[in-house]
Length: 557
Image (tube, rainbow, N blue to C red; front, side, top):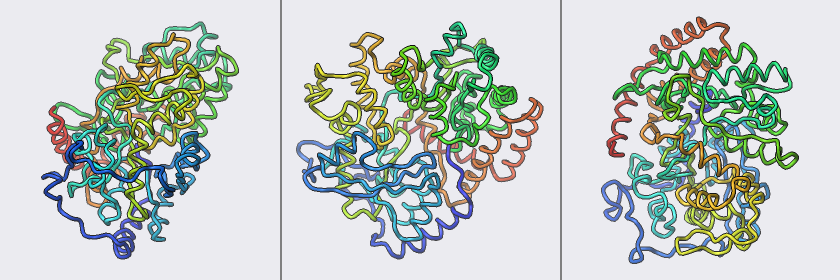
């Protein structure tokens, strides 16, 4: 879910981008697609006959700056992650951090005003600032690089890249975690120690979850948080519960990028949705009975991590549960093998089919993107690195460490050949430590490799994260590609409506979660519906419905 942006900052960014940046840049007018690119501006798949040799990454020093356009994370520098530390020492790479320390929108506005954009920006694919930078002519198109550096086109494929193209037909966004298979990581992690001490009760339905949380509160008091929903202001464990109350309900409905509920061939208001009202009454019950983290709407990602690492969470729910829960499981199990977390099948309301409940889903394009701005001294070399990093060599480095340790060479299929020295615990730590620098992840390549290897190991030696992704989060995910990128231009009327109703949703999530009674939840949602319609919410839903149907047609649905 998008982070809130101040209206003043957004207006400032628009004015600065259209006046200062456009006036001082060396950018040229946008060109029409060339004949060789085809009608839509797409490049053909590379072949031995057409491929052109490009710059070799690592052959000479490369330096560029990197900015994470998120409030919850900063790029910490080359020495902070095993992969980038090795790249600095062995590939002459230096990625200079530009940090916002939580104030990403303000930092971006300042950089625009100072005419000093980062070379590379990584963030949400629907981030409005990416649209603004595109409109101001400040992004580098990748089309001429796709044949010289073929990993992205080979592994993502033409269809996915076409879905990412800008209105001028060109490709400016480098996707992260693109794939044709499920990449869902949303779900629920259960504290092993607490579950055992409470008699290992069955945990399948929402009713059983509630009873369990009550028992946690009775036994441990304030020492343990029964239900930790992560950053609830972003949806997280609150929106996850929404999916438990209806077969086929989708997590994205409770998010600013969709902000609608599919009913037949139309998108309808989330504020009037009976399932949303029911789930928020359940959340309100958890909050008012102190069964849920009381700081859920104000805490940071680091706050959540600290709780998990100190064994103070009984049930953790997140749209990326296999990330922080994996980190906590590694830390806790190292001290005591009986401690840690396990991921459970998604909860469902009694009477529903548990196999039709999807707490999250996958987008064939992944979720984040990286863009190269025209501030980059040599954008082709930056792209060459990103393409290498998303290819087999880069992915194996990020997941298994440098060649010669856990793996050595590749087989006929291009998969890494694991050595006798392969250390499962070391690999788990490598993956956890590199998690925040996997900015152009290639799930199409790495996921089948993880599965193939893990299936050869006994259960007790399998990688925790890979095990639960394979057994639970991937199978319970659903393909949500058709609902993605239904975002109007940030600076037109619909973009303004989307921003305002999105801001309202964040307030509504907090207000309904903290409501005293079920009747209060209904009153809050009734008012929210009236306020949203006054802002033009129905117009936004109608536009998104049209775009959704176009997307379905493009995907052959």
